[in-house]
Length: 101
Image 1 (cartoon, rainbow, N blue to C red):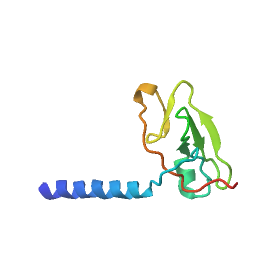
Image 2: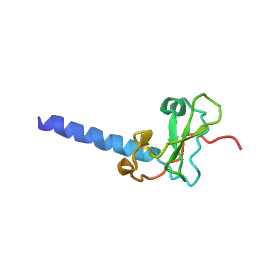
Image 3: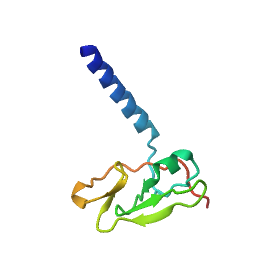
Image 4: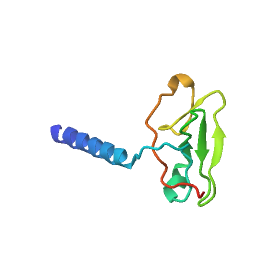
């Protein structure tokens, strides 16, 4: 039992380090380039300046679509619009690719 618990704790720690390593601080509006399969698979990306808005990648190499949550905020972890009471600020991370200039 102790071995299983220890293994689970190590797995959670490793996953946390891996996810943290992927997060590169972003000072842009967060618009993804929609140039990778991961961006398309995730679909939704937070807007870094406006918590009531988010970006949607629908097709590879097509510009992201700017969407708005009606009277709600976009939760960057849950990837959906939530009530303001359920929203909390999280550090902003750069998308995997950027749109062409």
